[in-house]
Image (tube, rainbow, N blue to C red; front, side, top):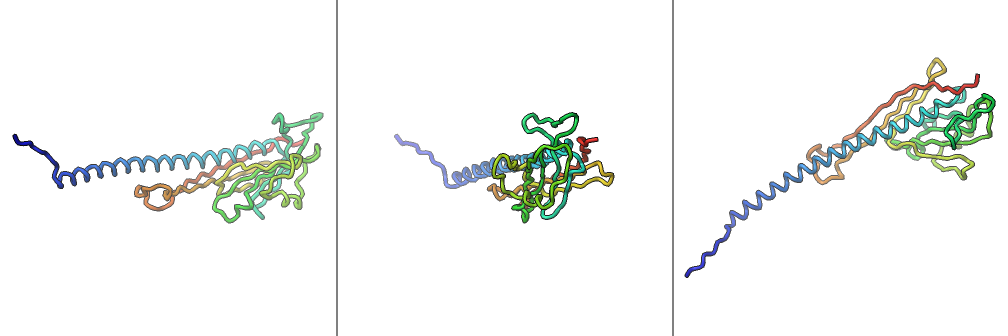
Length: 224
């Protein structure tokens, strides 16, 4: 009795390996393309969130200030400084005998250490002072002492926070009518495919997402 032995030829094995390789490449291509699109959506969402948070925080602070206390410039970095009467505990504007009580200064400025970078961090510094009912502009000499990345030495010296990252441009000015503050903010972020293994979908170039927000606000806490 003869035993029949079946086997695959070299050609059959080669074809099987080739077909399986094509299948794996197709699966990987679909996965890579999906991952890249997810990263692009994530980048877009991050840029939008950063811009909206930064704009919302500035508008909230500016609403409760007096425009006569506001100073803004682009040297040595872009900044805006103004009085604040907001109670840090309650979040409400503090008043005494119907008069707004000014408690400290709020400064928004781009990080000095990011000066040579394409995008920068937007910092918010709060500098407390003795309570008073007359708003004043921050002294220009003291101003430049506060426009740093250095946190306050103690709680009584105020606080320093990063409001947003990936800020490409910030323009703040007082409208010619003298009552309205105009703000233009641009958030921008790169998406690099170098982090992913498969780069064919978008070639080897960088993809970026940018968002420009513009707003105008009229400070409402002016003592009559």
